[in-house]
Length: 142
Image (cartoon, rainbow, N blue to C red; front, side, top):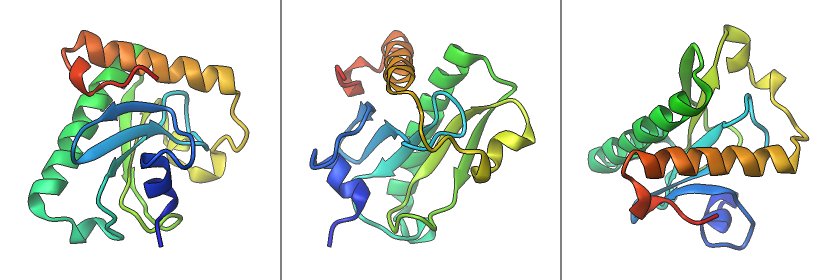
């Protein structure tokens, strides 16, 4: 049975993608901790991050690094947060988001009903920053 992330990757469920390559995708989460909160997800369904092959793990974190730099350039936060939790969806995903304080890391503070227009705007800002950084070949139009 496909995970919700596989369904998003395959287009069965809509997603706001900012990165697509042969091994991983990045899209905005539907319950952001902050504006610009994305998930870096390997295309391969792997439940636990420690089970990822080393080359895939390195690739996922390389993509997280590139997208994290884009998020940093757009929002200029105190830090760019990274978390791997994996309790809600049994498919590895790395949370990357602008963080200005410890409360930003608390999933109890996630926005369960974010404004669609703000989400679309956030995705486009990240796409522009990634294109400006030279990664246009991996950035979808929308």
